[in-house]
Image 1: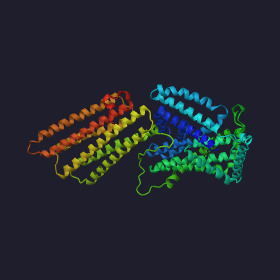
Image 2: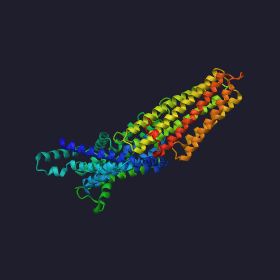
Image 3: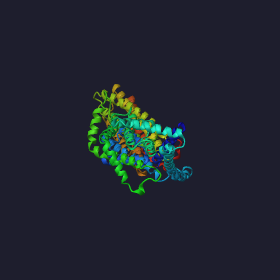
Image 4: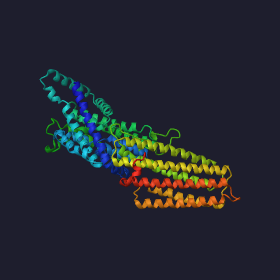
Length: 584
């Protein structure tokens, strides 16, 4: 008995590992396209449903999809309403597992699994980048099929046990069936028992797909009846929401609401299904009986696998049809359910959210991009604050100076958060292309931090200017503001081109900006040097002017590095050798 349980656990382990290799391989091969797909194809609830369905079919894990959804909501890439549509589609996508298992009896998965692994193995050793990742996809696909085949073979057939010559084996099977029969005789109470078992099973294996595989295999081998299996499937629908709920802990308000919306959608579906359960299950079995004989299994003694696949798919499809019109209402309810406590901000916040079974480093990168864009916008706001304070020497703007110092603290927090996040993304087994992308983003963040530090020093210089009463002449004041306006235009330039498609001409334009700013700095500093010996000008005031000019040029220098890093992010082959050994 213990050996049988270990065989089942081992089979589930092979299945889960195959799912992990398959999912992570797909991310490496098509992660960038999947990210763009999830960002752009969720603008209404119907396209969101399709996005969730296709993503889950590829990743073979609704839990992974919903964790990605929570991450995207946390980063502000998806709204609450958009996320609900994706979650609906993910629920439908996970039904593919039941159909695969139902087909096990039609042909031997183990016979095709090993050849698939054999085809993928050479790619793993001789391939590079995406070709190697394609080999991982094939190996993961083969392991997933192989695990399902092992699971089917490791669960003993109840009819064979009952007919066994070994009296102990037959007695054990009889006792187990009697216990299941006794638990099944309490109507709706029995449904709740098996539903709870489904929740527990999903929490134990941390995968609704694996839980579904176990359930269908047990049903096909005669251990549990169709109604009991269907109730367990309903429990698995609830259990899978726990992963997203746990992932939302520590995330912002919108992310927590997205996780609750997932829970609420699945629970509402289970509730209405329980009301019509005893009318719905016979209807599903009638649909199963209508399947053509050529589609039926040959090795299974029952078509219950197909019946469960029909039940799972039809239930989730009907749940979407019934509730898709109430998405705004669900969003409104969870908004009232999850309220902000105290002064909590609902602003997007970077937090690395992972799924226990799978590495999602490839699909988490959009969050880092979003946070980096926010960082770039923060530098613009800081610079506007500096020019606003500098342009009004006669006004008391001490409160504005305090605000700008707080923004510098925000910049430091963003630098820490984004850097830590990118390091955790790169710690996952991501593809070579995305590893280069992470390196470029780390460099961009470092340059943006330098820009924020320069702006902060400009604010300090301006504050010192007022406190020491070192007034610039009207001409000098106007010259510095014109110079600052040129730098401000350059900041707008890198914000506009950050993570967008840029070419060598864009880089040349950036370099022209820097040369103009450098020439302007030299001219202004030369004028300040000429004024120093004159009696009507103060040396310390002119030195302060030079410091301000120098820091404005430093901003331009770091801005050019931002543009270059953005270019190298898209054109990794053009990275100069001197950058390849960089710590960043």
